[in-house]
Image (tube, rainbow, N blue to C red; front, side, top):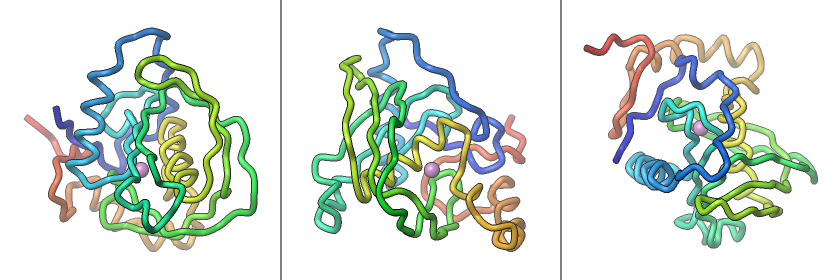
Length: 187
Ligand code: NI
């Protein structure tokens, strides 16, 4: 099932998401999140982006593994994750977000992190990721903490983008996937 992706301005994107009760059957949700992400050509999707305030996100960067070694085999679901450590120098890369279509900005993040999480079978993992894999994880992890990449922008940059961000909330976007806009009334 393909969900509508929640657009910038929806309160669910600013909320700290809830843990999933241990042992809950999460497989259908994870499958649907992958399907929704692929349909929108994304490399990551967090549950709040489909309107569910749960600590779940999925990633698949495999199609870019020739550009970045860290993305080899990088297709996973993260349930109740906790970032334990972020290390190494910060680096800046242009990021986008399926909830904020059309806007891309340079964002600075750590190069390496260690994360504890469960997969969709409730197997427990502690793993270290670097490069683009670490960056995608940090972006999606931010979503379950209620943080968007635009929150990191300077006050000047935010002011410059204000109109465009309001436009996104009103549905003024050019996309080929289904979205739900906070300032558009649905019947
Ligand atoms: Ni995002």
